Length: 370
Image (cartoon, rainbow, N blue to C red; front, side, top):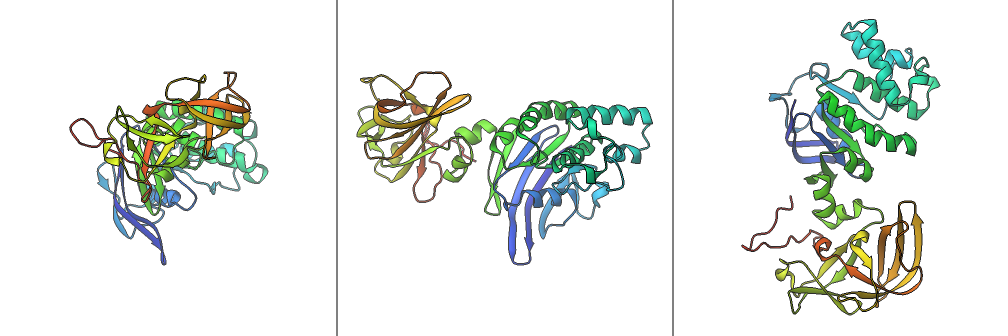
């Protein structure tokens, strides 16, 4: 089942929420809607589900225009943040409700409910009413109900929001497998960038009434469309430093700590212009003094964070740089040190617009940043 949105517009009174949103989702694909609160992610889901109607634009499901089609006739499974559980039913009956509506046998219902409840770690509360469940259990019950129905299209509105960190991590591993087994077409909303990158075949980053960028997790992380998106992905956040590229002996260079850093090929058009250099903390590496191209820094402090160690350093102009390295790997904790920049991962942004500057190829064309 495919989903296609064409120039969707939605407002509430004078507040524009969505302005000209278009996207498509292929059969069996999981598309993650990612963005800050208020970006319109939940509104977009409700439009697809038919709970609300757009002011303009078209919604197509498997080649059929949904204009005038009632929510119950769209064949879409939903799990929204408000749970929408039947208060008089226990968790088992809530999860089984779509199967009951289809008149499935009791054995099929029991097997299906037990399987999904065990996956979501709620098998011990199946005979509890919603009022006896925690918010996290209610949310997982609503998710279980949507999964048990095995719909061709599944809309999930931040379904792990109230789940504890351990279970959330487990679900990032288990949910993709379950969704693949069901071959469902999924639109998944989250504000957690790690969740977005773990679950999505593609990610649509939303802000300012629309979609700023759609791409694979790798595209979004390594080639963000602008500074705003670059900041949203990564922990610690990307280093952003004002620079003015110059012509060096072997191509374009930028200066850090009075040391020229060679950029990858294709940035000749930026020479002499005001830019912002973007460096992911893992694109910086501590090296011995005297290493060609290494920049001197002053290490202020380091913080162990389980699988990695994060170091705060200062350049010669007292600009802060965050450096990330695998836990247990050698690195200075204080004092003078030297960093080598992975030029292949260095990004340049236009200082005025914030847009990423794509390097030109050998034929003068720029790479696609959409």
